[in-house]
Amino acid sequence: RGNSFDPRKNEIRKVNGNSVRLTEKETELINFLYKRRGKIISKKILLQGIWGYKETISTHTLETHIYRLRKKIELGLGTKDLIMKNNTGYYLNMSYPTKSS
Image (cartoon, rainbow, N blue to C red):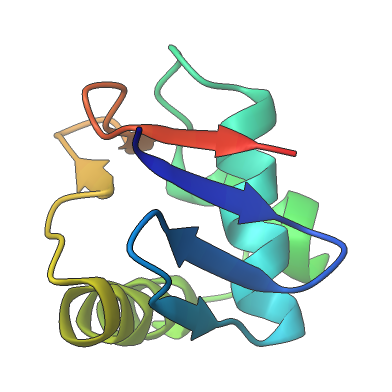
């Protein structure tokens, strides 16, 4: 039951066989959040951890990647809300049935 995320294959696979291929950065982003599941990760930490950006840089890189990734997952798997955001940062929706392999 559920879906699986395999960072070695750069994909999220649904039980019905559908899958979504991820770019390297998309894989890094989901893996970064998955390893810190249950925690809210700030934009600053994500930009430093994934892109190596310093806090003085102003960019929309993170928002753009998350927007595109959400659309890709919604279109490919029919699932919304894997990556959530609140006032302090981003987190994985733990009610979403995805397991890292």
